[in-house]
Length: 219
Image 1 (tube, rainbow, N blue to C red):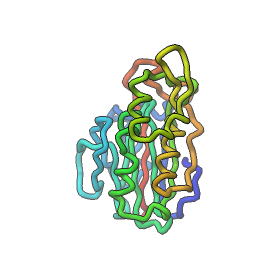
Image 2: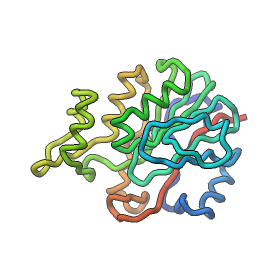
Image 3: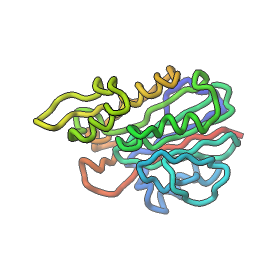
């Protein structure tokens, strides 16, 4: 359960590998039992698309969603990418983003915050389990993509072997949120790749299993 100072009406959860593969229908049915409604599942493409989850019943192509309606569940799946949960301090809206390096560098967090229509200073964020910098090696092209948008992103990269870097997705997410005015940020302490007992990891296992994170407004 996310440890963040969200209002009581905001509910959220993130699954571990013990819960099962959330690409599997049996695991999704089990997750549904803990939720007020079927989640608005997304067809995630590592982009910046955002949808209003209250308007869709089935999977839709996007990497973020939000809602202002109570009982509507926003959800993403991930195995190394970063789930970013967002909540309005007045419990008027919630949102969620699937932030891999492509979406993060392209602005999926910024798109989700803009779509929610809530002043950023009213938002709280929780960063879910994701691959940590000790395990996440990327090439020059990834670093260049981030630096093209923000030279300050260099602080999130540590030099490794020639032409490669260790990327801290959580650090970049915190930078992006702070730039928007979202300063109350929790989470970010779980590494999917190094904690094999608790989490699936595509980078570690080269497998397709996925975990999920969800957020909603209670009735």
